[in-house]
Image (cartoon, rainbow, N blue to C red; front, side):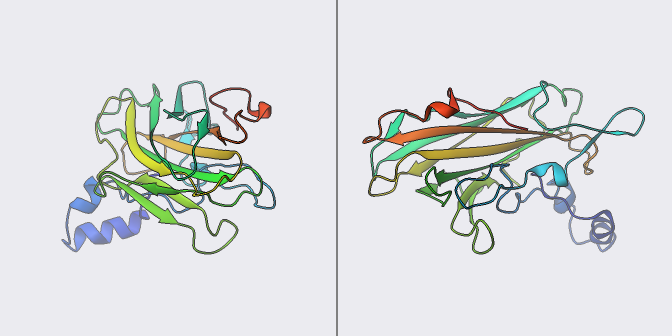
Length: 228
């Protein structure tokens, strides 16, 4: 989730005297689109999550499972039961982990998307109150083309914050009823050491029905769903 440059590029940047700001930001300009860990919906294939780059090792140097471990969570907050077409809703993402409590420079990141339950296509539009700390990314091509993502920027990683970390943004419902909407989010609790050796990834999902459907699909069974 926190994008990092390869080590040799970082060295060249520092040796070249370009700026130390690159290092202090942990190269955290935000993940590429389609990293929420969303499962397959309709004909749209499942998304990746951030564990492809962000990994964790134990004291013996062995890689360990760092996805949805019980040491933390990510949540989608303030999501109503139903949406009214055209209305705008303020949502929050909350991320917490005890795994990085000893890391003085810990960092936090997330990515969230909204898709139609009927076919997996992107639905609604996002808006951010502060473009300095949050950004909106469109998947312009590939398996997830048409989906829109809201995520942190390099200034929105809550550097050195003890947590939980929170971000707030708006989602505008489509102008006409589109059936149930699935929201998927992934969060990264990173230790801030400029390497991916102790980062923890959490994913969650939630649903919102339109006013004609009135109820959430029962298969989701609650306000929050985690998957591995």
